[in-house]
Image (spheres, rainbow, N blue to C red):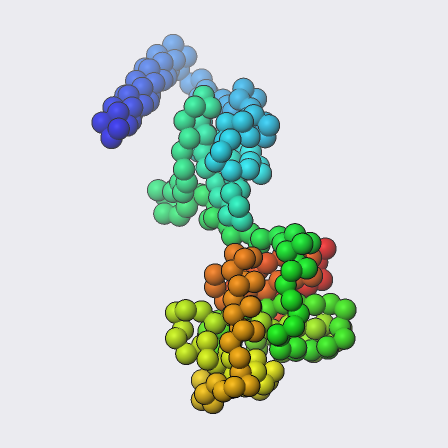
Length: 274
């Protein structure tokens, strides 16, 4: 494969060189025939005028590779830029004008030393109404207005630093949104060996203070008879059924499942967007 690409590259370079040589020769002859004449202006070719690729056609070509979201001319001549989504991941690939050669990104500019290809994007998963309804509000710690009409469900780990960061932003959010109830679900990760027992103690006491103490790296009491495993196990089972494998994870009222910490302005925008 490398040999074929090398030969192709050589052919392209030789063709370009031959073209330049012919152009140079023609220019010299023109100068000899018409001294003092103005230089010939190069014609700019509009690729889109001769080549086209519809979203429908691209969908057929990319069948099995993902859903085609957008098609446009790429910054590189001779290629189409196709945005493809697979699950909740969106990325860009390139297709040549013959519509037979697929080139995965990224493509780099050797002058600016930067990528011309937009980076892959992780899109939020959208839960169905059935999935959303299957998430119990029981066995949660409520933050904000318990009677609030707006609801967020947050899966958190008491030993997760990103969860601690999000929690600080959620405290700001409930001040800005007085009609908001946040249901915090204990979702201890296996990578944090002490998190499961902490989750039991926090949920057993339904204590926001204990959760914040855990986030502050404070020492929590050992779990006892009032701190059963079942509520934590139930949340783990529900979260895994939704595809949650990390924390924090936030479910918005419209069913969007967003992973990772966000600042209060982003959270408020997502909460109120339609």
